Image 1 (spheres, rainbow, N blue to C red):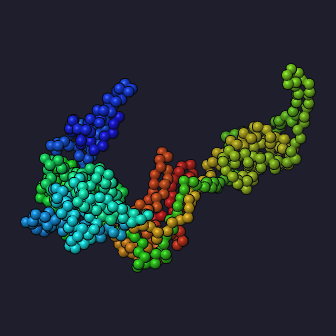
Image 2 (image 1 turned 180 degrees about the vertical axis):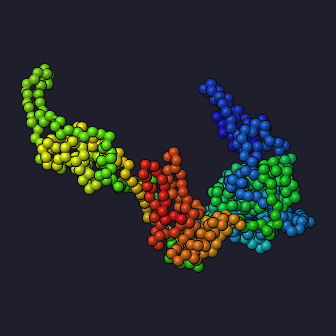
Image 3 (image 1 turned 120 degrees about the vertical axis):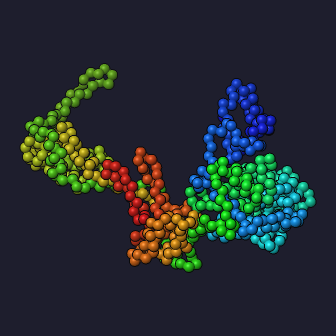
Length: 576
């Protein structure tokens, strides 16, 4: 079986891509007589060079569904308050100046939005040819009008001239591309492609990428927040809008966390083609004024500058998969024992077991009896030892410990007044003689084992894996900000804001901030949040994520236990 990624290449039967697949098939056939039995094609753009969908599509996830599910960023087309026009200049950096300035300003806004979380937003510009890419890169790296891009813009296309240069030493060493008059060699070009895949890292000096066709596919950079398209987009040009948009669709944070945007600066051909192409993908693209692009995320971090984060700190336990089981027998009474014995008949005392043992010694090889003995077993002086024996036997059967104080008085009363037809004490020889008989043990187990199991509560306590972690050590993280997910200021949280999910959490957060018995609280969110695992129905592993955290004892947040009385149920204490 072949798993074929970037499978939009298969539209051309004569391509090297298909030739490689045919070679694999023929090689297998020649060597083993086997063959390829299946080829699974995967592509974000399953279209041929005419922009037509492949006919062999089996499963399709439209881009609109991926956006709704939070798997990718939400795309917006940012338009200017007036129509953008090309300037009368041969230099592309000045001809497209209006588009570039708008993209630069929008990128600075996204950088401000994400800077507290430690993420580095990237600006991406796709040009119509390599000359334009070189001109725009040169201006971005030198013009004070684009100050924050100076020396931080990388030019990526196949006709580059220059080489890679190592800058710094040790752990701080990195590679930068330096342009010169000599064409780039193949080794440096490969290294440059590798460098382009690490632009998300804060160790990379680059915050802007200018390209032509080099980054159409196989480029997994996630931090692009602003795209400035400066070339015609059409199926005839072999450039699909999904391919260009794909440079910025990958999320910076895991799916299901903050709502992320990628803004495409207005381009008339680009916008019209979007309306046609992406409507088929179930994605009605939204066009908004650039100065009204909303901030959809906000950074949450321990606010050391304005709050006493030590006083407001909460300790989060670090749990392991291990746990301690503490069983507890409660509520077992003599009336329960009498009720459980009703289905049975009292035993006679006269039926005593045989106190004699006949012994024979036989020859190992011939089997001849060479010795006979008769042993008379002495009787116990009292039945006190038998009570302890039966208590240990019941503990072993029920897998419990420490039941002697509870069971010993009940077993003694059971043996003296309930089990037999006549009432006698444990010191009576007739009773003592019967205690070792099998029927006595069978009746005692039949009565007590079900009673013990039905009245035992087992408390399971999770074991700590290491020292608790403080909330004030959490790294900044990004969360969604919207009308339904507002962020509130609060005095009793160590974070800069409390993020809320709809009106109920808003009300609870406000209550916690003013309640006199709540000294500190915090929203449990982000990738570092506390998640408590438990067994759901069918022994399925599941996780519970508390929404708000606050300690009862002002020292630490402790995990609650799971209590079982026949069925398992999860109880998480101190998590609100």
